[in-house]
Length: 289
Image (cartoon, rainbow, N blue to C red):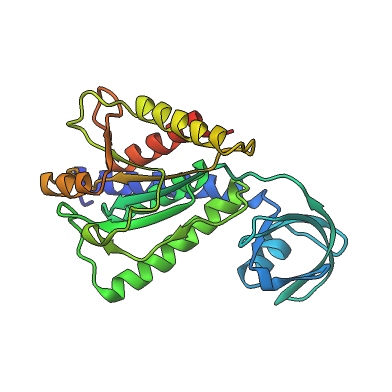
């Protein structure tokens, strides 16, 4: 009998863990009766569902004519309770019962500029930041990005990443599916139209994330009172996270020239797949109403 090496044991152990994670994840997803559709699939009082959602509704959730489910217009964020009127193997037709006057979306709109790590880490980053409430994710090639990306790989990866965001959005009952933008280089990023651009930087010792958020909150509240508006404040925040190895010094200088704010996330150094999630969670905690 061939002796099992430590490498093969670790490899098989990791595979088993990943299988358990997938089963646990999709078990949660199986219970969700929430469908996100494009605007053109919702016409007047009728809804047409096609694609992968048909199989999920009929074969996974075992829903039938007369059953109710929640429909979300992924372009507008509007939610509806709807009833299945008929279905085939390719299409499910529904009738809107009522519009739901509530939203799971935040008044804080976060765009995550994520330095591309190893691909399986990127999938985790997309999944978990979608669940937390990030609105958009931009994969960024930085100096310390170790993976090589050509056009063929990029197209397939973007398609897969968008699908991961879609599944995570449904599982967490989001009203929108976060957009996964095209892969770009850091020097080509446009960070001009944000209320704040926050960069997680391990060498920042004085400016804490909480302090920066409190200053931003006071500034926007002051502007709101001057304009005599009582509406809920809307925040548009950019978060910049480096890949494994962090952000290079010349990239820090480039971001500083674009008026980015560098913040500390505490005394400990976080992994790239952890940093964005922690940062987004704290931003939402401080600013969400």
